[in-house]
Length: 85
Image 1 (tube, one colour):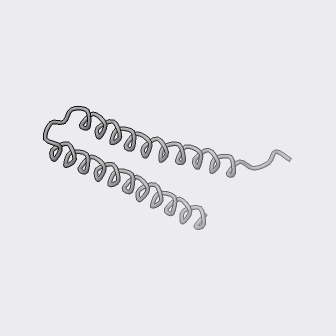
Image 2 (spheres, rainbow, N blue to C red):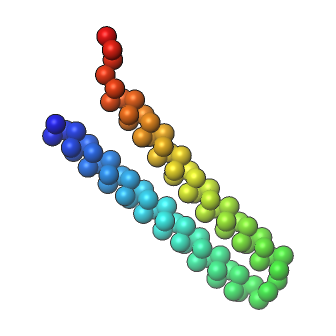
Image 3 (cartoon, helix red, strand yellow):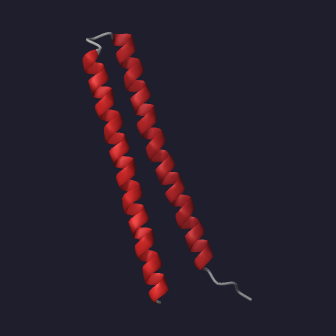
């Protein structure tokens, strides 16, 4: 039982720090995009390109994290099942 509790604590720490990494990366992308748009002084075609790239980066990062987390949770639940034999 102690081993399971330690494993759950490790999994919780991985989830927290993974989420922290994704959120901080997304914030960094948003800050760079805002600074980029501010420094471009209204060149609309370049502003649209910067915002599109920032949106793509944020959505890709978030989707990758959620996908990896879902697969990890599925694998963990399948590993916990005992064989019926």
